[in-house]
Length: 470
Image (cartoon, rainbow, N blue to C red; front, side, top):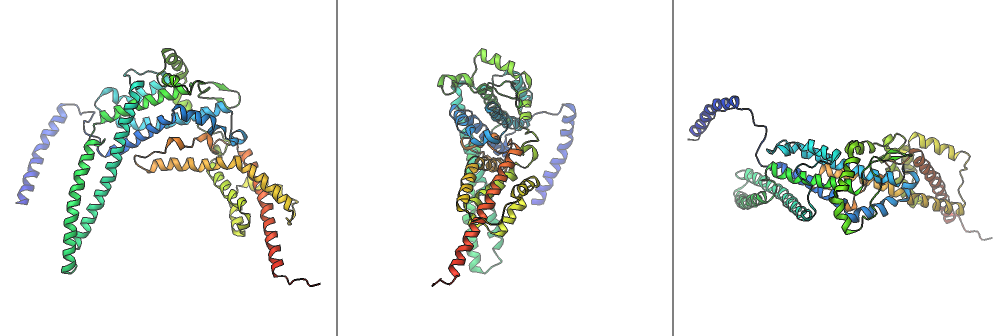
């Protein structure tokens, strides 16, 4: 019976092929699809999360905190290229670059839409970025912003729950296969236990599948590409409008660092009334933004993020130097715990230029280090250097970790409130100045390390020496 059913299906399938081919020849192939998003819903949820966090990073409170705290790091003024205007430009450029990458992902999804305007998202996005055009009114109005945000958050939350429940279903199904395969192999008593376990798992799986079906209906899974791409498109346009308005984007020139993307943050940033104007510019603001955007905003942002060769980022050593600084900080904090192997490992981490500089500084320095006052002075000096250098190194490691985390995890993005910006790292740090600071740390570490060893050796000698009874 099963064979007959299979043959009937095969016959029907074969007989239906010519009809399908004739239809293909008589009509042009469809360029769109009306299917639901399906498994791509998890990628959509990730994009929505990134847009939510990007939008949140552009709120008045976050931008004021960035300007007044994050960009006031002492290390920025000591070794990072440029002035405050350039630092703000880097922030704007990094946010614009992140938004552009998100828009590229939306563009790939848009090719599956049926609506012509959505299929043209890539072109429309760049026109909006460069000329301020929004022919379809995708920038969300001020009164609708909060409701749209909550709707997106709800979609992300349910889709993330769906991802977890589908994983749980897979685990249950794997467990069912495992126990099913054991039936008949073991003794009768064990077979009964496995049979009971199989029945229990089958019931759990059935309930789990019903729950997954419920979540699919409420999440992005069963939504059409047109629906999700429109939500993403409107979010991207709104975020870009906010970004350009907040940073007063302009291709201003700086005598120190060349063209920049922004000139200043609005002085009225903290007022609630200005917040509405920044997200939804007045006609005069729109005209100013169109004029300022004529120099290809996204291209200029991308260009600005490429560090010069004189910086650690331009030399490709920013992360290595960050790890080196963190290691030295631990050694300086507890020099008495640093052994010869750890000292050799540290030296092997040093680039050739730093080794050469260190050798020059240590020429003529004796092997004895017994001056407690000098050791205390060195510790204080190293503490002052680390006070401004260590935060940049730690931020460098965090920045790299956050980007790797975003790439690895589905429907996840780093909280924008705690997000590290590129300007807060060592990427744009001047290479010569940074190496001079590292060399100073090494010279000081060398002295206090030798001093601690001298003191330890002296203490051990006194401990084992016989008392003097004279």
